[in-house]
Image (cartoon, rainbow, N blue to C red; front, side, top):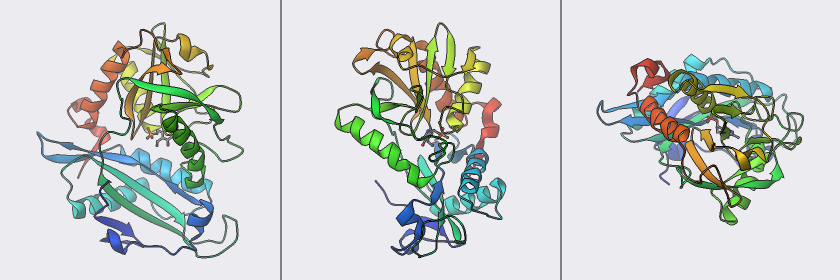
Length: 305
Ligand code: PMP
């Protein structure tokens, strides 16, 4: 993977090699950081880079920071300006991934959230497809459970909580699967290691509600809106039982990295007819057109660099 060119670090844009923290940094020792992940898409025809829904990503980022008692003067708008400055310095002419990170920066020992200095950093790097088999993924039901709201809130993108995602992803990958479905403490399907889940049953698009220990995904929200407006599908938020994915018609996962990844097998059982279905196929195409700024109706979701 290519390294970032620059970073926003301690209030300035600096060469990436100069953005360094000490090994005693609180966030590195205790996972006391929160992050965001967004994508920039290169539009060949317009020769421009577009960032997808930065305001929404920064709003969730600042909410995640609140969960860890971080207090910043920034707004989603001011963070978007910082990002645009960074991307202008970088000058990428390709698809990229953007990582804002807010972290407990003091170099001290002691587990807590209060009385610590908070810092924000940001960097971007070239990025392509995240899940290899994006039109025919084979997933497993993980033996790990999703973190609970009263353990570490899943609605925040909290760095320490991603040890849960990493356990899930590594065991799935080492067993030969592309991804995993993760059950919450109630035994319902919450989401994937770093993506939300949707199933189609009898023509209805179903996804777990935000109270099922999921991240409140921005791609999830996007897909719900596109499915309702453009595919005239009824979209329902309700808990999903484990065995429903064995009998549903279509299954797919959504996320900034995963985009719309179609799942065609769960633990060796075919989903529907065992190949990409019509809803997944249409949403994949529509999503790609929207994020590359080819659909004027949704151009307000894209910020040009
Ligand atoms: N769930 C988890 C645990 C994630 O890390 C992500 C990726 N940010 C998602 C879902 C998808 O969220 P989004 O569409 O906002 O990227």
